[in-house]
Image (cartoon, rainbow, N blue to C red; front, side):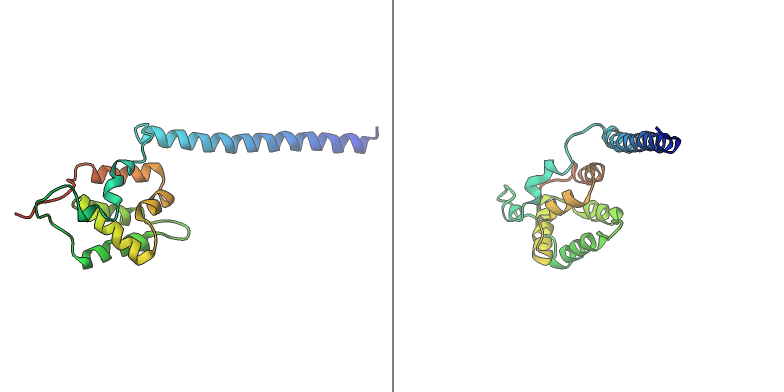
Amino acid sequence: MSRETKIKIGVGLVSSVILYVVISSIRANVLFKKISEKIQSGGYTDTGLKSFTTWFEVGFHKNPGTNLNYIKQSEGKLKDWASTIEDSWGSWNDDEDAVYSVFTEVPDGVALSQLSEKYSKLYNSDLNDRLNDKLRDSEQLKIGDRLKNKPAFRVIQ
């Protein structure tokens, strides 16, 4: 075997080892990020939105389980919220804080259902599906935290 062949084989082996180490490092980093996200979110497997599936249904606001007169949001407010959410999706980076601000303002399940219906009509997209597609688990948990202490509806006094 010539010296040139030995060098080529040696370079090939070293290159293979380097490539293996780089790929392993990338895989480990991805796994670390996933584990870290679960730890930061309290280890929950719930995305934060699953608990509110009923409220995301477009018909919930028509029958929230009461015979009492309950408060509904104005069309203008619903359109503002829907456009804030839609405008927050970017090509490279989303404005999660804008999305969080909407869910901070949403007062109850009826309003969320109305928002889902308005979003669907304006953008031909299911709001809950869109949030699940666009936001990581930890970001969805932040929305769930904003909704968890809100009532299903508010009664007109």
